[in-house]
Length: 448
Image 1 (cartoon, rainbow, N blue to C red):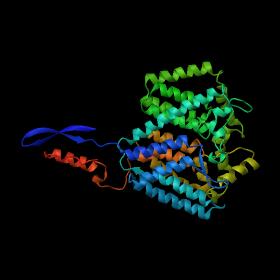
Image 2 (image 1 turned 60 degrees about the horizontal axis):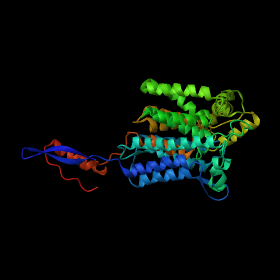
Image 3 (image 1 turned 60 degrees about the vertical axis):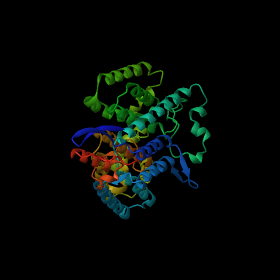
């Protein structure tokens, strides 16, 4: 895109074209690869021998990050980098003195994941809106697939509804997740997982984030209704919780009549059609909090039981943790000896494995990475809530690639100073503006 600017020569004012700064195509392409892989490659894995897999979503997204780094499209945020080094130093101390045998592989994986947050885009102009639009467009496709998947199970064979499980070799599918889940025990109707998501809960959370981003941006009613409908057919409360946590705040600050009207219409439709779509399977999950062997209890209540039973009763564990990888044994003991089903959201896993000192520094690190110079504070809060409370995401690599691509890399934080001419077209464009201000004729821009 070019614009017309005035310059003076011999007392006469003439017009000449000066190029506008453009969105960096390398950056946008890498962001698209990173975001796309976190959505459509969740189920896939690269097998490495017996019982060993590399998640394809994390591998491809991380390669996109390395490509940006090698192409000089990332700068180091010095403040975040300092907090990262301090946090990793304290975590290393926890590994050394932890009471149980630490998993060095788990710790190395953690270092690789959180190094993502140290960087910022060197050429951020226009990339933030592009990244959000890419995510929304891909989630629109996912929502359509999820709705089709739920509806088609009533008319076609289940192999066609869950094609990856039917036709892909097991060694190339990431194991350890509940991919196909009935609405209730013994039910023949299955929750929608959007075809490519690891579980219905993952599908639900990504949809919830899409709803928030859409509300913060264009607020297109058709897309909001589409995302809401997909949220219903995955029958998972975590995505709805994410939406309900931030919807009142968003509506108070940016709400309009059309969004409120859409919410009212949706509530009426759900109340009328609730029986037809087994909505009770979703609303009745509130009762799960009373059962120590239910998913709702495990996800939201059990972390406080773990805190009581395995952290505060030992000074060493409280201050320095039990070591990386210890959470698996802790949850096993909780079920075997204390008879309750446990879950490991990021905050409790961090506290149990690394202790109070590391958790405090880690919280400062991740908060600075998400909020320092943020493009949208509400989005940063939604991502932080998503990360800490909705799943076991401390060592979930592809989710952090998504958070970096949607938020952290775009933040306008302190970074290593760069020359003006290192920006594609930036130095020439800035020099032209200076010469125009001095009344001098600008040179023709160089090709490219």
